[in-house]
Length: 454
Image (tube, rainbow, N blue to C red):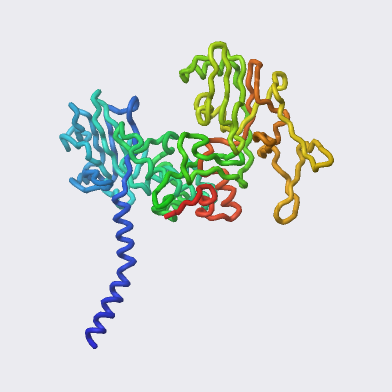
């Protein structure tokens, strides 16, 4: 009887301990999940790196995506690092030697790094620590060695402002974390994983944190996207213009979780831009093409969503075809905001686009006020500017009665909708969905096909 009682007590103690063990394991996992973020490198590499911490410092090592503590330096609130003959040498502000060589895996952490502490580099506060890579020219690459969760803290507001609804911020946190996890080693040639710009994700360190974005990060702690049991990158962009895109319709590869989605929640985002033939020639030449004098510009292909898939530029010396993402990359991604566009030029038109509605007996020009019946049987006004029709051979913009597919004059006037590459989650739609009561997982599963969040 005593044996049974002892067994029951032991079992109860074990069950009570399990939550603490789970928390311990989760905490341990977070400490083994560091990321290297390049702060200064290449042409911006530094010759002197001065770090400040009110609580002093701790020297250690980057080991297996974690941090191994080494020598404590609590009495030093400032450390000066220099590259001396290929060695990273550390001194205090009086020049007293602290370390003759930090080493390629050495990390300088604030002494209170594990208790919310920060350090300062060039007047800016950061969580985590600093790694320094000695360069042959005597400069140093500066790397912020930081946990993935704290990295998301420093990214989130820059990618989606903290004033947006919490469920949209949570969706963005999962996307940002997935991007960080899946892009380890993107900049391996410089000795780190990701940079701080839009080439990766905009990262501003501790100064970029806000209570709302930190809350969204904590509420989704550790969560990333999975497809078929494997983690995947959660691409995102600003506005879809009514449709997201298949990955292969923008880039070169097909991903089953990056499928085109009719975006029913996209806020209207119209844009327009103009480029003279001479400006187009200059942009083509800068990209390595040699068209000669530009004579005409045509939309020679659209994909199933209506986005432009091919642009044909005829020149006096050669005909140039720009395809998919190349269109925006060559002409300018901030000027040509998306591939959802047409041309407007009333004087030089070949094949003006137009559309009619027919019930089999009569045909009418519907103008711009078109209503459709929804599933409830109630009429709903159709947004003509972001809708597409099909004429049996190709898709066309319904609101494009004044649009042309070819321009032969001296200027191309672009008129389009949306902003960004079109792959994955449109942030404007995530915000709109959150305001309608959708949860972050519902938002992510709407735009990413057959994914799991875990």
